Length: 623
Image 1 (cartoon, helix red, strand yellow):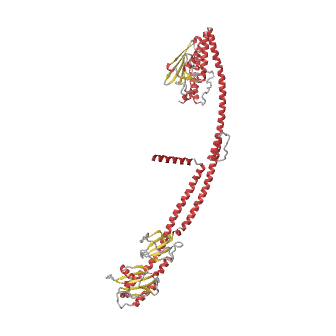
Image 2 (cartoon, rainbow, N blue to C red):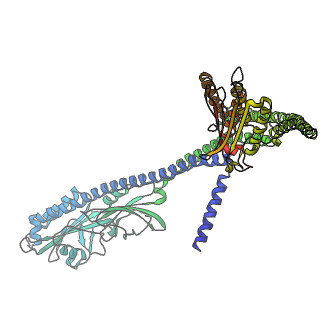
Image 3 (tube, rainbow, N blue to C red):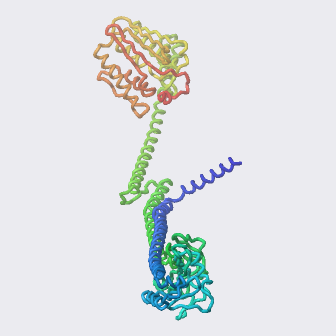
């Protein structure tokens, strides 16, 4: 099942790839240009947008944390002043006598001393000193009821802190008020217990109220964007300062690290808000910058607008350029295709005219040259066909005469037999066989027995002509009875041996023809005991035979006519045979000649061993 699914998937993939390859070139070019122009632009736009978003977010966070740090520094300064005031108050001798419960303590001097702090530091709303018996002294603050202040929560918180200065935030339902009647939400309280250095017993507590106005002045002047703001939270997450109309009444503390700084996003007050916070290690307060995500992304929207505009312009330019380039490249190709279709339909007069110098222009010029060459080849083929028909007609006409001739010779042969002229009858019969085998029904490859019969008829005619001056012998191995050879291969060599060897010697001469197999080749040897060939002429003839064989093997025409090799015509027949053998079977086959002056000549013909009568010479030549 898996194999079938894989095969189906492979076929589907092959079909898709095949379909893509079959798209017109203009569409491929358009897709290519769009891919190399639009996709990188979109990728660059997305990368730029992401990078700028990260940079702006980091810059906003860093700048907001810097502003929060400055606000925390101001708040720490105010709180540090309050802490220093508690130290100064605890060291005052009159205050110490009051805390120890001594009646001689000058309350007026204490109030005057405390009044100096409120005068010097305008952010202080009031200072209250309470001893362990519940008595108190203040310049601006007093108890609402006669109940002892040692029962107040703020007093107990100071006692639990064991002399450590602590800011406790907004007062809540305490039994202390001021002459100015500050609301609980308008002041922030800080306390510190004064301990006996020896017993570590609590002598009393110093309560200082800080005006919320100074905190608001430090925080409200910081604007985060258009509507963002700062708020200050105590250690329990309760707001110490918040603007009049905050985005949310409760800051989500779940994702805050109350010992450091950070930033996070949360859904609060029906808005998607961004929070950036920093905790003051001195006061324990957390200053939080709050602004909406939409406002924080205002600059990003502007940058995105420019990026999108850039990508849009690049895409439009890329599409325009891709369509133009695809059209400029595909249009001449389509035109050339149209011309090729017309040429395919048979109109070879069509031409592609263009002054382009690029590859398409070069292709058009090659197309024109191809059509011209095809026209010339067609004209040449037509001419060759016409010449071939004419040659066949001439050949047919030429064959009529040999047929008439050897039919007439047959008639002479039978007439001589009837009248008892046997020598005339044998001569006519030999001449008739000579012509009949020479014609061979137009075949170039004939049986070796027919070729030897042809040579025997020729030798018999010459034997009658020269009477007792010529004698001959033919030897053929029995296994070579069925081989085939090139027609008229031996008669020119025998003729050359008679006219230039036997005829020139004194006394009778003898010619021996032998055919044998040697190394898978047919070797035919023609020997005569004639005059022989002079060494100079023999060397010249050997060179001519070699040259004729090499030249014939390189000729493109299957039946070249070799030129005469010498002025006297000696050896012309052998050169003709050499050229025919080399042309038909290759340069490694042919004639070799050896001769000794006064002793005779030996001609060796090397021929391929052909045992099938349907073998063509082209096949043997390729082998």
